[in-house]
Image (tube, rainbow, N blue to C red; front, side, top):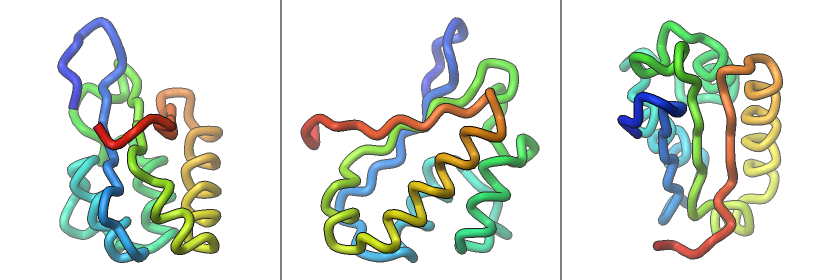
Length: 109
């Protein structure tokens, strides 16, 4: 997470090596430090992205930028799951101005 007090809090969701929905949900839980009761399904992800009470401290005031890296291999291997993930991320960002989701298009570095 970014510590720059002038900008949004940055969380990096690195999907390198993720091959299925379970792996995606585990990475999201880690990247956003979601509570143990996070349900690891699409509805729970949508709820968590919209529920500021489970966001990292300071994210509501500063905004939260979720940068998704290394997503292309997962998207290629599981296109239907990836479309659902994109829909959930898009809808969450549309619902709250405090959340921005960016798909990194660069390499793996």
